[in-house]
Image 1 (cartoon, rainbow, N blue to C red):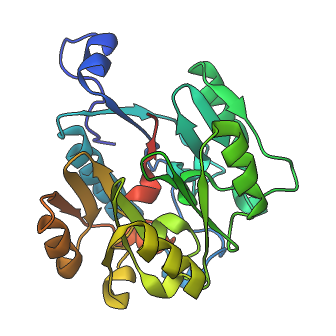
Image 2 (image 1 turned 90 degrees about the horizontal axis):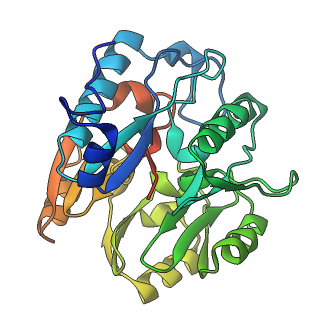
Length: 283
């Protein structure tokens, strides 16, 4: 696989990491495929083109790596975990602590041990929810300054929100997701800064929409571009890496002073994921 190196030239790892203060966790798609159906996007008769998926992942990797503040860590993919490439679902990280995920579907529960092992090896303090509480990491919990926006109902339980708040000592705004096509919060909302979010209103119940509109400046995403996963975007300072084919969203974001980097994500959309799903913010 011709992926960009995650360390640069002759610099030592510590030198590179010190110069790049946004750390991301990614998983190269060595065993990516569509082998089951656990969301409305997944259809066994519409499996991804794996070689094209590898090209798209490499382009995303290179786009992120070329940003001035980004350092990328890699976790090897377990050959029995085709969705492990979607590292955003591994947990929620702050400082040296990680709130580990507890996946709803048995097909993804196989990933937990690999991610836990990686965090342990890298000296993270790990907390896990009660076995009865489902929580799918940064897929359903996003920092917005000193608040966490947390989705629930489709994949994560609302009971996880109290656990998050108590562990991190930070307020959590609970947002109910009502459309199974947008089963994770990061498929229908992204945070540009502590005061500005972009979201697709149709994915949320009326009360959640009121909460968002009353607490943030908002950019509303159209259904057409939400279906292209416009909201599954990665924000690194003033740079936004987002799925291609979303010109209205791109224009709205650029009007706020951000620089947008579109990347083609067609083969990951077939599994219900895109740019943000493929990355986990480590700090």
